Amino acid sequence: MSTQKHFPYVNNKMFAEKVDLSNIAHHVGTPFYCYSNTAIRQNFQAYEHAFSSQDTLICYAVKANGNQAVLSTLAKIGSGADVVSMGEILRARAAGIPAEKIVYSGVAKAEVEIEYALNEGIFQFNVESEPELELISQVAKRLDKVAAIAIRINPDVCANTHAKISTGKSENKFGVPISKARLAYKQAASLPNIKVQGVDVHIGSQLTELAPFQEAYQRIAQLIVELRSDGHDISVVDIGGGLGITYLDESIPSKQAYADVAQAQLSHLGCKIVIEPGRSLLGNAGVLVSSVVFVKTGEERQFLILDVGMNDLVRPSMYDAYHEILAVDNSSTELKTYDVVGPVCETGDTFAKARTVKESKSGDLIAIMSCGAYGAVMSSTYNTRMLAPEVMVKENEFAIIRQRPSYEAVINADNVPSWV
Ligand SMILES: *Cc1c(COP(=O)(O)O)cnc(C)c1O
Image (cartoon, rainbow, N blue to C red):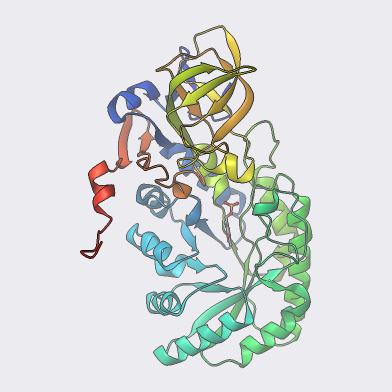
């Protein structure tokens, strides 16, 4: 059973919308990423509907999947972008996302990046520290521009998620501690060419409960009241991203339930709400399709060795992430328990241990599910493996949205100095 409704089995063959995945594999080879255009749009529209009673800007977190076809899909239906680098601003702009719908997060914005963002005229800088505030002010003054800012507040709540994707505890590097917030806003208001307009919070990723959001938003609402009494004109509250998806059997609150919690805490303030979802728009809109290279019998276990590796999908080795692993052809009735591994020369190149999958043989197609977010964007060419191509499907059409590079292109990217 797939947890992703846009990747159904039809007569025991896994489809992406109305396209047979084995047909795509035949055209592009394996491994490849495959995204459902309809899933992306429906996820966006679910947020839009959930927040429809309120002035809300949905800024897709580009880092989850920055492919231009993905960004264009979202741009066409009105999405803004949450970016964390100049490269992501360039991507968002190239896909047609207007500058006035871009918010810029990140702890280490460089001077050239700030300059570029100011010249583009982005909606808001989400400032993560006092030194960053000073740098933005200096650059804005030099350019004779005004930088609209929110300060990212670290509310010191526990997001109950994996340590590597938790950001809202006081020990994390992100944002300004809530205890120092009023002082930071005072400093911001005193700096030239800075317009204080908002408050920003993002407590982590793959959250499966609403309580941490509720606690964070309650603290932020209280802070906004205090900041207003200090004389700051706060008209924007950016509540971050972080709503999780189902990878295994997690029951995730609906986007509506999430919106209800946010609005219950924040509506009375009359602010424009900005949300920055990434994973919850893309995660379950994509799969990673690979082929079985060998089935190897070890002393104690059977290995299912795939042609996809940790260089293509790093989440299992980096975050101990669980991904469902399914046979693309579901017709076999035999189940087997395998360690599912990749070809990379690292023990960490393991997708699952002791996982029960349909009995498979060399050449069979295997789908790794829920790979639309933090998949292709985190891939590398480690072991001189070519980046997996990306494919987008819409109903009965599919298109390659990023090609597999040639070996030649990858090797020729290196330069050998004459003195070697
Ligand atoms: C990563 C990130 C997001 C998106 O998080 P998801 O869990 O993918 O929704 C939003 N805002 C900021 C500041 C981020 O760093």
